[in-house]
Image (tube, rainbow, N blue to C red; front, side, top):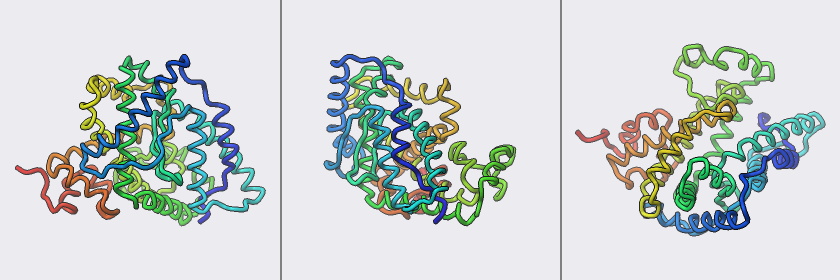
Length: 356
């Protein structure tokens, strides 16, 4: 497999941490309060999610409340471990080292941008699965949206701990996702593309897709995976990328639904949080162009598509039916099934859809 380049991960870490801006101004007491609240919320969230969903309770793993620079270090560490599992060159030649250092600098710069936006993240690929809650970003958003701090911190923890519960219910899921990534890389190899092909897609209207939004190879409506991936990935990689997108949409949307089902018991201002946070998601601002480039717009679509799917299945089959998505890879919805839940319910549950 030749699509996976060698990267200088130490350089990526150093660049990302050096470029990372400081968080919002806080006193020592405010920092302690935020850390204590997030740790408490992380402890109680799994039981609330398990009770709301019917999925098994999870009690193992790490819960880490960290700052922005620590988040960069964590993401680089995870990326390096995944790179090794996917077959990164162990002994790069001089050309690969030069290219790998340039790409690492770009990765570090990208992490410095994203690290100001990420509230939390569950990492199933580290040796010990871990929850990361980025305290400065949580404080920054709760101030921007004028939210009750303790309620918002609990809300964030509920979402991220839902991912812990999901991956515990589907222990095969990390390997499945890595398998899909391998398929993307194999498609890139089969395409035999060079940098000229990528540049041609960059200057072509629609980034390699027809002006009417249809894929130029299949004629079907194009599905964006984020502007950068749309340009950099070969058209042949579209199918496994669609599968990755469907899985991520399911996980994010399911978490969004469950955090609202589990939240009322412990979050008095939940309706206010949801309304203001959705408005923030829909907003533009100075990060809009960067977000579109790196796929944040595609991620927002994942939240919504996955939430619509989850609610549609819950309406018909309840949590017992919806939880079957975690039984095996064969029970995951395809991209088409995610957008039309009745197809998944017919295939997996043997149901015709919503009762008359």
